[in-house]
Image (cartoon, rainbow, N blue to C red; front, side, top):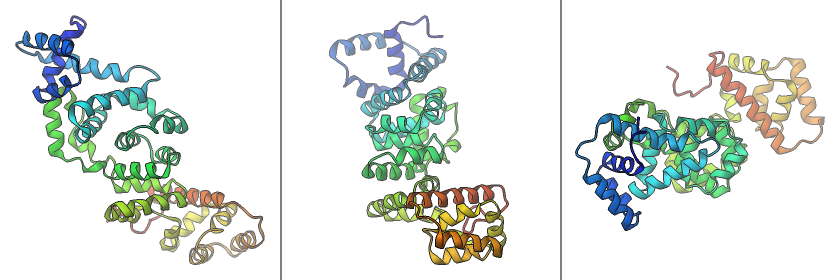
Length: 333
């Protein structure tokens, strides 16, 4: 659609489409010759047909998202352009809005298919807000694996920004819609942004981390924003919370957990949790688990915590299937 336009005309149409204020901010980062050429081109345009404006926007986003193997570079480039022209806070909101609208959907698909170790390395030098926005488009397990590879201070900052992502207000989105035009806003409504980030989703990520790591992150967050940290903690479902399950739910859960796995998990559990779980096993199964606890070979704490995490994953799966009820689930009526 835009094949009949030259690069200068495309740039002029793009700057006219985003409005005077944004264009002025972009001009501050260009040399005088480029500003002069663009200004001349802009002055000759009397009207902007919707078809041309839409084509220019599509090509701009497609250029960033359609190049294989450059997902993080494209993400970084777009973020830097918007940071320079709009400021960090508004740019972060715009990045989220565009991604949720599908503007760089292909880029996000590439990110989701990237090895977590490689993604963590690529994101290590990114701003925490940009990292949080990226992790909002992968599942909790992958986000946790990426975060676990960050330095402690960065991990805390990313988790905090992730927890605050749902603070983007509809009024801000409407303003962004006016700035970009209906081409972008037509892809997604405001309602689709309501599920991004937030303390509940942050809790899901922390539940996928080793308990010692998640506890350090929460302690760091508490020193920064006690209310947010407490809200995340309340949304988490921990191994200790198993003792709050009703008897039927516990019996259903333990049928899906092997005695060896349970014994390993109980190695580092609180005594009251251990007693609560053992009393819902058959006498024979309970005796077998106790034997492993008392006379089994030493195991690493990391392995015991991993076993606890696996059992929690089983519990969450059974809860989602409606086979057990996790106490304190906010969505229960």
